[in-house]
Length: 551
Image (cartoon, rainbow, N blue to C red; front, top):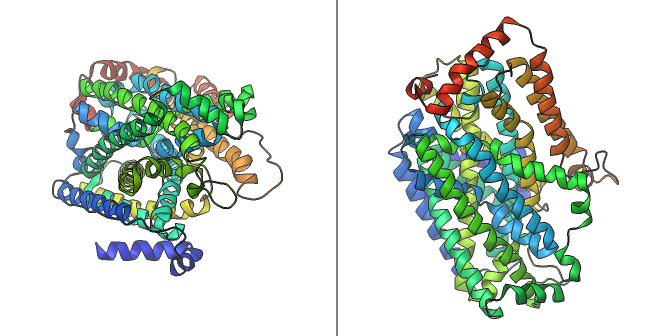
């Protein structure tokens, strides 16, 4: 283990020389909260204990990727909620409500509504057709090599965008609590993430997610209850006070200019609605349950937990406007919140519960981040080892030991990449960054997965062209859009005017799949169409699922 950590740190420092300087020159910029640090260390020790326990029970590829398929529907629902209730939700969305009011509410509704609609469509069928990754389903009747390659590239791109948000949230949180440099905090999270996935696999990841979900739901409930008590538990009084003290005034309750633009609003909505159906770390969770019945239960429980949590998130944002935004203790000389808007929920916990409650909520926030990055990293590593290595390079003939070894190497590489990206996007709102990841998932994975399940006419050629069209166009539009072209590169104006490109990239993906499928008259296309009937029966009934698992 020590050798792995040494290699990790060496790789990170080599990839980012400025990081080494930042670590060497770490300074305390905020008072150290001893209680918060103590609770943080207790949680880290506990999760490492879980990882050690899980490592003793992770012997096969099935154990590593899916915990042997032995997770119940209720447990998986909690774990899915733990995966979905990320740093973007807890820190980013509450921070967005704190800063922009109604815009944050729109994001919250979008994140919630996309979940049941998309995953009720695919959850049961995924479990009946696949084994380890959603590429098992997308390539079921299509050519393995090109479809798995596309799926792996799309998954890795989504994972990288999503990891940015988690790494930024973790860095800001530890920077605030420990008074250490942001870069040092990012490295710490990266190392822990690598350890969880490398040694514990899906079993450790699942239990970290379950524990985190319980802690987060309980902690947020107590936080909202204590803060809302100051307003007589009246939401109307809270909102009126927020409008009174916020610099936006009554405009706090109306959409901003970016949201009132119909094209921008539609593009964001499509990303949030369709993105969950293409997130590899969420889709992967449906292979951890024993059958389709438990997959349905997973969706039912997860939807309830997630819906309740998002209600709390909106309330936290408005409570922070009144309690934190008017208290000079939490503001810097310029009048901005210390640590940035993403820290609104953390400051609120101290304002209503003192250092002890701040320590607990901070530990919960850190648990949130670690659970999500572990799931993301496992999904990315699985795309490399199972899809690319085992099925593309080795043509399905790789032994389990070498496949798991490749997955662990991929985990190390993803850790270095996540740390580097976390440094580059330090000042971005993490809820916004996750929305970009959702847009990418909606433009690449979702169209290919949806049409592979429901459209008999989709061919390998159509999926390949349409999928890569969605992937390339989405990334290109993000790079030349306002987020990267202006905020990161420093140009005066963006080439692509919209922050969220899903409307355009999704349209290109679906159009490409349709056009290049209907014009494909090859014998392979005819064989793929004939194979659909058998796939359809299996996806609906689960008959022959054992055979599907060996596909």
